[in-house]
Image 1: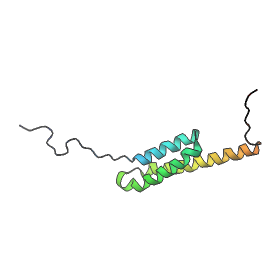
Image 2 (image 1 turned 90 degrees about the vertical axis):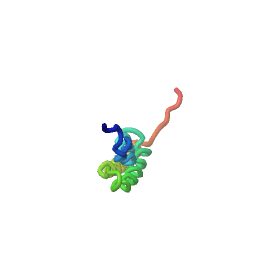
Image 3 (image 1 turned 60 degrees about the vertical axis):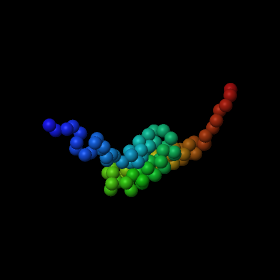
Image 4 (image 1 turned 45 degrees about the horizontal axis):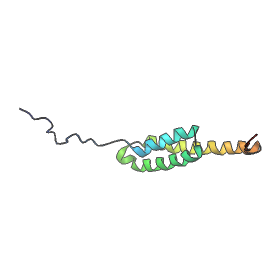
Length: 96
């Protein structure tokens, strides 16, 4: 009679996902639409750290995409600032 659970692994599975690459990719995608000046650099940093982990955990493509999206986020922010500056800058209306 064979016993159950005698394979030696005891249910321990190693994670092959690169969490930093995923975090960088999420920051890059969300940064295209919201808070690009904050999420862009985060995407670049997480992507660079994810590329360092890529030989062990995989996800080199996601890490590279995170870096590219982080740069795109910063370019979008720079373009928005140039458009705002050419239109007279920002104005704040408080009260009536």
